[in-house]
Length: 449
Image (cartoon, rainbow, N blue to C red; front, side, top):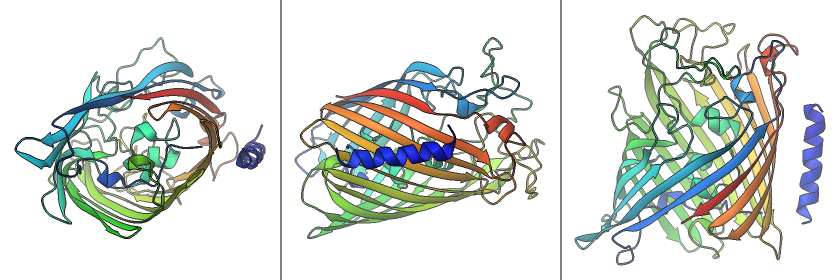
């Protein structure tokens, strides 16, 4: 079934859903961590969540029987169907009692099998270790390792995310991977030759950034009746989950939002209409020539969006754009297989100076009188946007969730995907490998404690 036919089916299903969804919400994610009012925070609250899933990919190999990463399941990329403990996080949060209850702390560890723990062999890794000072009205200060302000998919709490997988634009453009210090052409990643599909597909030697950085953030929110205005300004190392810096440049992050509150729901489940805009700018070191000399390259990202929640309905839309350090897949940990600074659009793998743009729109509805919700999402990402080797990623995702209670749910997703190099005919150039990318489905159990 071709992509157009599948898109028509997806839209037809959406129409049927409307007559019959959600944990995503118009929440203020800046204020849901480390900002407990004085006298309300305990000294230590232990909490966490576990996500178990089964996913299957129906893609077909290329004409020689080979597989590329989008046709395999991450993070291991050695199979098309598998059970996985995708996330297992446990942490503690609280106030610095009895000395000062305006000082909050937050610590979180990840023990699941994902891009955070699997790349460098870590079994457990810190995702958060921060302190928030709430002494100055209008200017709260947070320092340490924590989520930087940015796109809604990255900033929101993952355990209340409505889908199993991120959109391609968030996954590829925003979920940062860091260049290997040693060119993988001379230092290939370990590879099991008995696993034919995945041989040498995972070539990164550092974990994903997980939408986090180590730095200092100034932020707060102001209410004027039902209107809430929020801001955040942050400076960070630009080195993801790594506690140290790897150059002498700092990344800067800016975020603004305005939200009209509907006066119902609370915490991550409050209802409202939110508009937001954000930017992040930094530099990365990379040896594009594999000559032992590292050059500095800009990495800039920006976006804007809208989120609405008023039960039984939910809607989110966001547009994102990036310049520099465009990720080209886990088998290309070099960003470029051509000399640094090469602007020739015929060189497909040069993501150092390239651009990427994309957007998504998603929504859902609670089925009245039940614990079911139904979701629908469309996302689009143009990788190496404007070049001869631009790749267009498109996907419809149908979702169904059942909530046992506020802390346990099961999620089913069916994603209909299409990827192609727009300047090439079917079977030619990059399409020789991209052809055959097909649907993916999965089921996930989430429990929060």
